[in-house]
Amino acid sequence: MRSVLYLSVNPFETRVALREDARLVSYRAERHRASSIVGNIYKGRVTRVLPGMQAAFVDIGMARDAFLYVREAGGILDEYTEIFSAGQDDVGSPDLSDSAIGDLLRQGQEITVQVIKDPLGTKGARLTTYLTLPGRFLVYLPTASQTGVSRRILDPEERERLREIVSEYPGGWIVRTAGEGQETPELDIDRDSLVERWQRIQENIEHNRPPVLLARELSPLLRSVRDVLTSRIDECWIDDEEAFRDVLEFLEQTDPTMTSKVKLFRRSKDLMSAHGIDRELEKALRPRVWLKSGGYLVVNQTEALVAIDVNSGKYVGSTDLEDTVFQTNLEAVREVARQLRLRDLGGIIVVDFIDMEDPEHQGQIYEALLEEVQRDAARTQLFPISDLGLIQMTRKRTRPSLDRTLSRACPHCHGTGRIKSLPTICLEIRRKILDMDEESGLSQLSLQVHPEVSHYFQGPFRELLRELEETHGIEIILRENPLFHQEQFEIE
Image (tube, rainbow, N blue to C red):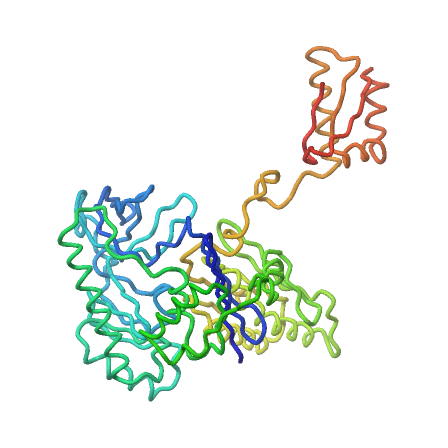
């Protein structure tokens, strides 16, 4: 599988795209005015303890107080976000599920916390007191003592070798995917750098009063290089000379073997546009995703969950119905996994596959999807196909989805994706006219509408205007306004 990483940098945003076998599988745009704060470490102050929710609000110096759950308030975090590593072993931690938040925190208390989830909508950032410092090859857990190895390192002997190395280090350590194949001297350099960074953070803790930022994550550019540019990436293209130099300098200090993969895109044309990524992004914002066979997916993102519906579409198969359904579902599995990564969908996800009668086919679809999502950096949990033919899953969400990042709710349909039909608008106008006639009596009025509504009044609904004039004695002067939204009208 050939993988190419694209990094586009300008004064306003940093865009990161990843292709596998010429297909876009991941995209992220980070606007510099609203950069992610995931990974930042703060010294904060507890402003409110909520026993009923087993959580607390913490002032870290932002517009909204951040949120800290009890299970993450005592040096506890049972899973790591994508920004820290590309899928890691669980390292285990004490269970605080029975602890009361009031036993751990009190109002006014000063605590050191790290952001694990950006503010979303009206919700403040989510915090943990279980600090993690990511490096090129390692993640340092200064308040823990466990060790682990990335789940993406599959060779058992390599996993054991790496685990033995980091088990000699004081504190807690995770070997990242990029650490595969690295020898002890390279890992020692990364370790020393992270330990030194933690010492500087401790000094800031002692000499600063909350709320204060103690340590800031890397820039979006360098963070992407650190987290994504592993030995499995064949090429990395960058379209800005200064960013190109920064990346080379960063790699020279952390992983010189990767510098040969980094290339400068010198053409004046936009990097993403030149490689066709912008066209793929337009498709990623559409609800319908076509499969090569002629089937398709419909992806609907709601406030509560994400629903993905699989349809056979134009695919009719060549043998029997059960085989046609199975082949369509099997093809859909790969596309579902790709769309989850590309659109960065998170939370509760329900996939409605086409109904299969054969239990063996159902099991194969589940296993195929399980295998596909294991390539995903975000933590995903799957449940077997239900009696209704649904697969339910959860996917770790740390930032807004691609749709929420690149688009906004329609001001006309208020985010529903639908507007009133032409008959509905015409009948609404009729009711409004009759209400006005009852209040003040009308003999003539001017009705200004969108051209499509005007054409409907003069075509399929011409009887409505005739009824108003002949039955109610109201003469209608119809005018078109192309600047109006279709649902908009004015009566004078």
